[in-house]
Image (cartoon, rainbow, N blue to C red):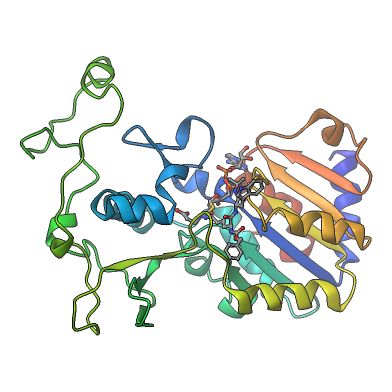
Length: 301
Ligand code: BV8
């Protein structure tokens, strides 16, 4: 067993207040792509470009097809051993624990993670909310698929006449979709509509897009937990740490004397060599690493 793992597990066993910060890397083993790197594309669209209010305003049909594809994938995915290990840790009574997840795929809840200890700071693919400023309609835990007839099978590509393109091999894709692969044109009236609004406002995915503020009550709860007393350990799992304010929690906890354990397929060598103070790095698939690292506290998965 490595020196880093021994040191980490010794600290883990003596930790009373633990935070987990989760990113897309935790769900990779469940078959869900990350946002950055080669996986960050959908039909040649950069996923980050689609996760914005402007993208939805300009082409709600395109953005709804993107989120319908994400919903279908997340529903098909199964929680992996990393989700299960974290869920088991969250249930221990002898520690104060909180998971802050940037993921919207719902897999930690399906792994049995208690909702009261899970903060989905970027929302959920399975929440819908009305776009009308005057309406506060929200539909939680909506797993209906497809949400409307027009959104059925939108994970496929379509040719200009709207016919579903047959699965084509890699060589043809580059010829056929130079910039953006054609997607279905869907009129607004065939997209999810608010059942409460008389004027039939559009529903939108209940996620936090870039440029939108995070749920303020949730942020307050996280701030209170972190400020209340020292956090002994933050587990930083499968995140590139590029998105604010999620990425700010690690430094805040470290500044207050907490130690950091990073679980990622891509870790700087200084951390792997133990040169970074109060920081351990475990390189590999979080789904494999977490059950091993947390075993002294959670036993076998
Ligand atoms: C806000 C929901 C203020 C939608 C998402 C310039 C500088 C700094 C900040 C900004 C800036 N310009 C703008 C900002 C703020 C902006 C931001 O941070 N932008 C970034 C891109 C620079 N932030 C915001 O806009 C936030 N809001 O600041 O509000 C405000 C206040 C008041 C009023 C108005 C506004 C809102 C951000 C929320 C965006 N929504 N998701 C959706 O999911 O569709 S973020 C999106 O990225 C996902 O949630 C995703 O999880 C998240 C972060 O990415 P990661 O999870 O880290 O995923 P990533 O692909 O990046 O990395 C994966 C990692 O896993 C990699 O490290 C990889 O090595 C690793 N990995 C891969 N495989 C594995 C693995 N690890 C382990 N095991 C494996 N098998």
